[in-house]
Length: 165
Image (cartoon, rainbow, N blue to C red; front, side, top):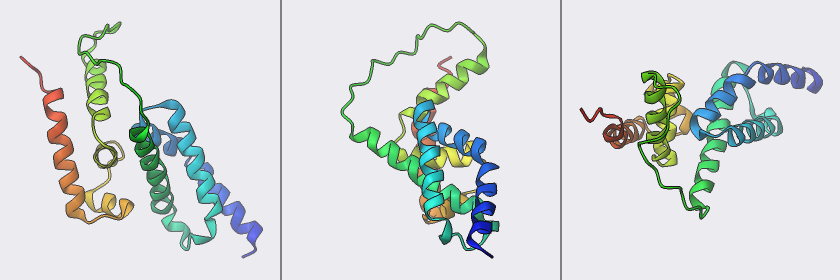
């Protein structure tokens, strides 16, 4: 197959995944600008390395690993930046008192407290609905490590999410 044909096939594969890639990046990074940048960076990196994709049937796993790694690097850069966070309070003004919105906000706050590695496995497990083995393959980790990170991440989040009643 000519390079032009493979380039067009690759472009078709990526076009179909832009929205889902952005949503996954946003779930990991919880920031619109970072998610936009990470998605763009991941697609650019995938394009530069498109010749390394041996099996187009495995595109999702191949590209997913690239996107997750780009997001992981952005999360690590955040930790290295010296930013003093605003004081957090549970008594935030809420214009909508719905339980669903409140729960979502509590989960988002608890997720921001996780380090990059723990947040990554929680997002891939519960947002992307991947199995432990799929996460292990995507992150190039043993399944036991994924299970351990899930356990400790959920244990860390639980006190912030439990109803104090």
